[in-house]
Length: 238
Image 1 (cartoon, rainbow, N blue to C red):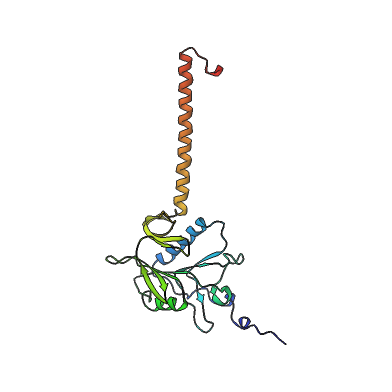
Image 2 (cartoon, rainbow, N blue to C red):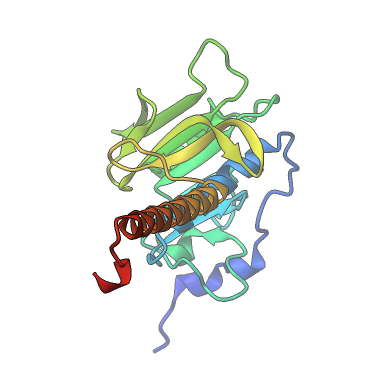
């Protein structure tokens, strides 16, 4: 008797488009999730059980088109498949829903507060994060958590996400040489993770400080040796 595997009849990630091919009309829609992905790689260098997708299709039904958030995080999945990486994120292969999705609002609304929000809630995605850089009076960052199938807004900046073990928030900084408000991951003490260029700059500053301290110590030692000689004491005999 043959064993029937229904998953074998479904298209694989290699056969499905990796995005919706819709060009972004705001560069931040790529840069912000790209920064979050880079920060995760620095925060979790040894972990291989997470994946952060940027402008990648999430396929949840073989008969429907993918939903394509600007960014999403999944836990408990392989970080890398192979050197070609993931072409798309297919739920019937991954068997793990993303735990967080991110939308960066452009000048043209794309259903971030309506249809997309409803789609993510229907799928059961725990956290929905919306960043609207064009807002002036309302909060630019909104973090929603799914409670009884309804998204509830969480106040604060940053907002701690216990299921992820990180906080998420916004503040001014510099990334790729661009000074502006960016989105970051935070530790439980509310300290944000540094960007790659900030981390490199900090390491350079620490190296310079160590070198300056070593030079200062050498100068003080030389002054001490000269002082001892002036007193008729040979410092090499001490």
